[in-house]
Amino acid sequence: MATKLRLQRRGRKNYAFYQIIGADSRAPREGKYIDRIGSYNPNTDPATITLDFDRALYWLQTGAQPTDTVRNILSDEGVLMKKHLLGGVKKGAFDEAEAEKRFEAWKNNKQQAAQSLKNKNDEQKRSEEKARLDAEKKVNKEKAEALAKKKADEAAANAPAPEVVAEPAVETPVVEAEAPVVEETPAQEVVAEPAAETPVVEAEVPVVEETPAQEVVAEPAAEVETPAVEEALAAESATEETPAQEGASEEETPAAAE
Image (cartoon, rainbow, N blue to C red):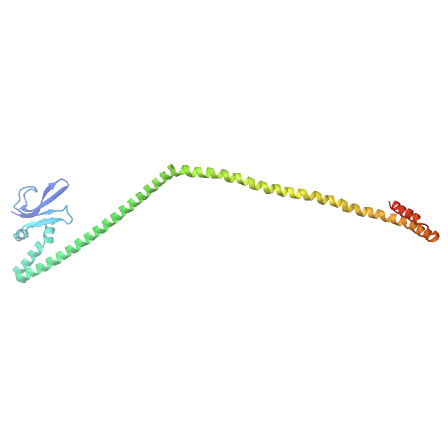
């Protein structure tokens, strides 16, 4: 009878775990088995493995053939390494103490590598978690800003809008009423001053022009009076007339001038 080391399915739908058993190769998957040497749960990270090391080594030494999955599990747990070292002891390559020493060294290296891998996975998980939290904070911040802006817009539309419209409506008429009053006063003053000055200048110009005309006419009259005066002087010197005649001659002079 050939013995196989294989997995036997357990669990529920979408959550299966397995038992590691030694059974007859002709037995069905869910049938009877000879020995149960461990369990394997792939639903956890990393997978959870429980194994009876001595019983697994015994079945390998007696010729049991593991399936591929069970072989990988036994290799990770060091059962195949132990079997290899015990084969070297049987051949006389080294003694049992040296085999145990080598197995412990291999086991320590395996644990360090597993721990390093675990730390790496944990660091990756932490970085992913941090990135997820940062992205979530950013989204929440954007939502909060959008909500605050929406509330501010609603508040501005509801309350302050009527007050802002009412204040300019009161101020605008006051400014427009004052502006025309200031502009009209100087306009009237400027128009009145030139109107008063212009007639005065035009009235003086004709008076100045008439005076030379009278003087030009008066000069020929003076020339006409000159012979009369000379005759009067000649008469005075000849006859030595009385002062009465002099008064008469003076009265004639203005008449002649006229």
